[in-house]
Structure formats: structure tokens, C-alpha cells
Image 1: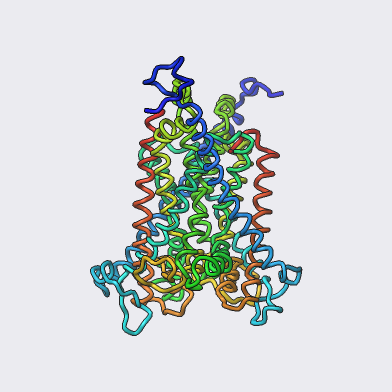
Image 2 (image 1 turned 135 degrees about the vertical axis):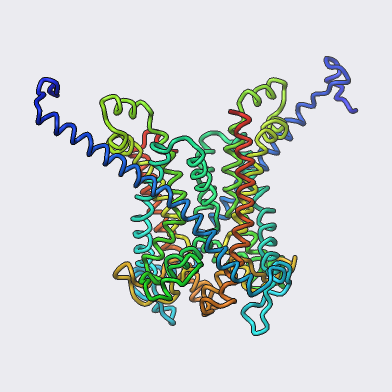
Amino acid sequence: MTTDPSETSFRSNLFNAKLGRRHLTGSIFGVVALLGALVGVAVLIIMLVEVWRDGIRYFRLEFLDLFPSRKPDQAGFKSAFWGSLWVIGTTAMIAFPVGVSAAIYLEEYAPKNWITKILQTNISNLAGVPSIVYGLLGLQIFVRGTIGVGPSLEDLGLNDFGRSVLTGGLTLALLILPVVIVASQESLRAVPPSIREASYGVGATRWQTVRHHVLPEALPGVMTGTILALSRAIGETAPLITIGALTFVAFTPEHLLDDFTVMPIQIYNWAARPQHDFQDLAATGIMVLLIALLVMNAIAVSLRYRFGHGNGR
Amino acid sequence: MAIDSSSVINSSGATTRFRRRRSRRLSESIVAAVLMVCAAVTILTTVGIVAILLAEGLSFFGEVSPQDFFFGTRWTPLFPSAGFGVLPLICGTLLIALGASLISLPLGTLAAVYLSEYAQPKVRNILKPILEVLAGVPTIVYGYFALTWITPLLKSTIFPDIGVFNALSAMIVVGIMTVPMVSSISDDSIRAVPASLREAAYGLGSTKFEVVTRVTFPAALSGIVASYILAVSRAIGETMAVTLAAGASPRITANPLESVQTMTAYIVQVSLGDTPQGTTVFRTIFAVALTLFAITLIMNVISDRIVSRYKERYE
């Protein structure tokens, strides 16, 4: 064992702290860990810069006012943009009430028994199911109207849903439901029990307590969670391709049973073509999609800051 | 000011109050039932997924034997001489998941250690959300990035022979997009290690590196492993980025410079094509999805188990 002669004067030969070297290792490791963390940030920046550089050429107002076209110069994002708004709107109308109600049930009503435990475990497992599997669920249930056995409603001519906005919205709603429920549960849980007790104390029923006291308090957190879940839905491509959303649409939806396409599908369609011009169009589409995401996240964050007093996360 | 109700008792007042209480009790139970139905939607979703995959999958296995499916090495369902061996798809999926985890696990772990042990709170509050943005970027964007930037970069620098579609670029972007799963969950579990353990180690004269590698990291290991499993499971289920970047050539290969096809990419390919519903070829997507669902479900359940065991230890 090598020893530093300056240290032997006050330390035994058997114990060598090697403090300098150990601290150096610690600092080097800290730098390596920082670099590891920064790789992700660097990729994010490069990705955004590249999308910007490729996409800026077509980034102008007409882009949102033109339908897709065989000629890159006349191609636009109109049908995809409005299609996305329709589908996400539908998703929100379904996922928000159902998700919040389910969260209220689980937090405020459900008895602590094995059924509730199964519900809870099931929700966390659903969050891990690949999104494309939800697409197959939507295809069978909403498009074909079957659960696999017996003739489908589509075969019997009884199903009008088809590959419509409603089908897309329902499928995405099922996809984000676990996220909405978990986020809503968290903000319901953050409401202090004293509020509930005070409400019960003056004779309110359970629903009155939830309706007038717990829910208003939890609402900013619930909304934030829902908007973040919707911002996941707006970027989803695979489940909508699976239910058979069209890739070339030259109209905007006018009601819930219209055909549609969405921004990510249009982006995929352009990016998968070999011509360079179409790939640049895909980048422009990505810019619009990212701006939409940014707006949604900004709303979510501002809700959290305006109303949230330590509510949610 | 509220009037004391007992002072206004008369017969009709008492009846209305009684009626109101009864309708109130009724509406209470209606509300409770509605809420319960909403919660049950999640159960119905699971039942629906399982029923559909099993029903269509089983009728597929009535036409193609499970042995040919699970052990066959030729996946050409769309060709006249159809081969229904799923191994090439599984191989492509695992190749990309493996490559992605070679990126996401080390980078995510380093980031988690930095966030939990080294970073000042101010830095942490900025860095952690930025890393989480990586998971929020739509996967189609990663696909575009892999196809139009990473592959050309690899071609012009290290691998001149790389194809337009290749597994390597898909591995890289899937790895990057799963970094935040590892970093955030691992950071949470490292920070959940009781401060007393950390303080005791410092009290014995340990340096930061020693505290991290010998005390907090091992103590948080179950949470960290759970995050690894989740990241790999997410990589297996990832769809659009691998569809765009890795292409559509099902083959058994370990060469990341070649194009491969994953299970998810195959489902997309059939969905975009004009295969008529109700045919054996169309049912392949349910058999493939059933396989995919089973793999990810098993991984998620294992990860859940590990997390819950870990929770018990410190509560």
C-alpha cells in the first residue's frame, strides 16, 4: 500500500484516507452525471433547430388555409389542423367528465376494499398499454361494433360511427382516461380533509360536499392534468391510423360523423415521401403541432399558477 | 341569518322537509351510481382489449398454427406465398428496444443521480422539466428527426453504408425519448431514500461519490430497476418513430445498419394498406398485438411489483 509521507506523521500506515483523490472522483462523477443529463437537453435543442430550419420555408399563413396537394407549393395543413381540433375537442368532452367522475368515485366514494384495489391497479396497468393497442380496440368496438364474437354491427348495417371524428375522439378518450383519472385523483387528494369535515359538520351530504367544496378546490389541478393528457392525445398518431383515419383529406369536418385526418398523420404522410419538398412540409407541420402543444402547456401551467396554492404538483 | 327551523314547525313544513330529504337521498345514490359507472369504464376498457385481442387472435390461430406463428422465421403475410412466423418482428422489436436501452438507461441514470444528489434546487427545477419535455414531444417528431437528420449524419460520418431506413437511428431516438422515464422515476426513488441513511454515510466521512454509489443508489435500486423496465416496455410499444426510421423489412438480424420491422410498425403498415377486414392476413395484426400486449403487460406488472415492494420498506 502506498502512503503519502506527509500524512504518516499523524496517521497510521494502515489507514489512508486518500481524501484528495476521493473528492476528485466525486467531482469527476458529478461532471459526468451532468453531461449525461445534458445529452437529452442537447438533442432536444438540435431537434427543434432542425425542424425550424427545414420548416420555415413553408411556414406562412396560407399553410393553414390550403388543403394537401400533390404540388408541394400548393400544399397546406387545413384539413389536418381542423381535424385535430375536432378530434381533441371530442376527446376532451368525453375524457374530462368521465375521468373526473371516476376520480371522484375512487377518492371520495369507493370503499377501501379489494374491488377498489383492482380498479386502481387496472388503471395504472392501462396507462402502460401501447397506444396502438387502443387503436385496435377502437377499430373493433367503434368502427365495426363488435367485441370479436358474433356478427359486427357494421356487417348488419347498424353502425354509423365509421372512421369518423367521433370514433377518433372516443378512442383517444379511452387512451388518456387513465392519465386524467390519476391526475384528478392527485388533486382531489391534495384538498385538505378539514374542508370535507366542515362541510359534513353543517349537514351537507357527500355529493354536496364534493360538488360545492372539494371539486372547486381541486379543479385547477384537475384541469391542468386534463390539458396535459390532451396534449399527449394531440400528438398521437398510431391509434388513429389503426382505426383507419384517412391520410389524404381535402375537406374539414363539419360534424361528428365526418371523416377526418389529424396533424400527426398528415406529418407522417409527408415525411414518408422521398421528395425533399414534402419532408420540409412535414417540418412545417411539426412546427404547427409543437406550437399547439406549447399553447396547451402554457394554459395548463398558467392554470396551475393562477389558482393553484400548492395544489397538484 | 338562518332561522331556527324548530320554531317554525307545522305539519306542512315537516312533510316538505321529509320529502326533500327523501329526494335528496335518492339523488345522492343516483350520483354515486353514475360516478361508479364512470370508474367502471376503465375496467370495461381492459376487458374490451383482452376480449378483442383474444377473439381475433384465437380465430387467427385457428387458421395458422401457434407453432408456425411463434417459431416461424419467415414473416411474409402480404405476399402470395404467405409466411406467418412472427420471430422477425419480435427480433426487430427487441433489437430496437435493446439499442434504445443502451442509450436511455445510462443517460437516464446519470441524469437521475445528477438531479437528486448534485444539482442545486434551482438547477434541478429547470433541468427536470426540460428533460420531461423529451417525453412530451410527439413520437412522429422523433421519427422525422431520425429520418431526416440522424440517418444522413450517420451516413456522412461513421457509417457510409447505412440504409435510408435503419434500426440504428430508431434506437437512438427511442433511447432519447425514454430518458425522462428513467431519470424522473429514478430521481424520485433516490430522493425517497431516508435522509438519515445519507447523513449517516456523510457522518462516517464518505464523499458524495461514495454516498451515491454505496448508499443511496443501492437503497433506491428497486425503484431504479422499475424505471428501467418501464422504459424498455415503452420502447417496445413505441410506434411512429420506429415506423418512420426503421422501415418495413421484417428480418432476423443483429445489424443495426439494416432496415427492420417492429411489431408496431407492422400493424401500422397493414392499417395503412388495403388488406380487407376479416381475412387471415388482416387478423395477423391482432395476433401480433396480442403478443405485444402480453409482453408489455408482463413487464409492467413486474415493474409494479418491484415498486410496491420497495414502498413497503420505507413506510
